[in-house]
Image 1 (tube, one colour):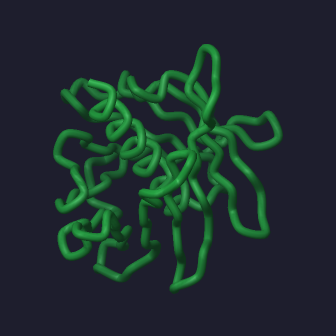
Image 2 (cartoon, helix red, strand yellow):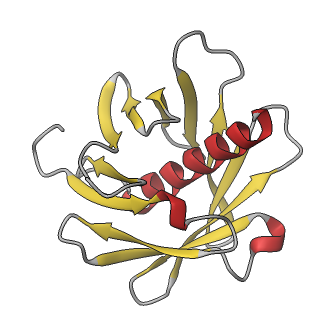
Length: 170
C-alpha cells in the first residue's frame, strides 16, 4: 500500500446484500460509515451514512442499462456514476465518473477484491483482501486528498455489480 497518510478501511462482504446494513470500519476497528440498505431494498438502493446516521450519499442501481451502472447522489443531486466497461481482455475495468469532475479508473481482479483505482495514471485507492485474515473481508486504502465517502461508496458499487454478474452467470 502506498504511504503518505493513506487511510485504510475494512469492509465485510458476505454480511452485505442490498436490504441489509453493515458498518465500514477504520483500521483500528472503529465503525466510521454505515451502509444502510434496509429501508430501500425494494428499489435496489442503499445509503452511506456517517457515524451519527446522517446521510452522506445515496446509491441506486440502474437495472435497465446496457452497461452495469450505479448512480451515486449527494443531497438529491447526481454526484458520480460507476460503470463497468463492456469489453476488457484480461482485467475487469470500471469507471467512476464524478459529475463535472474527474474520472477514476478501477482495474484489476475485481472479483477477488485485488484492484487499484487510478486518476491520471496515479494510484488513489487500493482494494485488497490480503490485509485482513477475516474471511470475506477486504480493505480499501484511500489517498488523503480523495473524497473518502465517494470512494467507499464506489467500492461497494463495484462489489455489488461484480456479485450480480457472478450470480447471473452461475
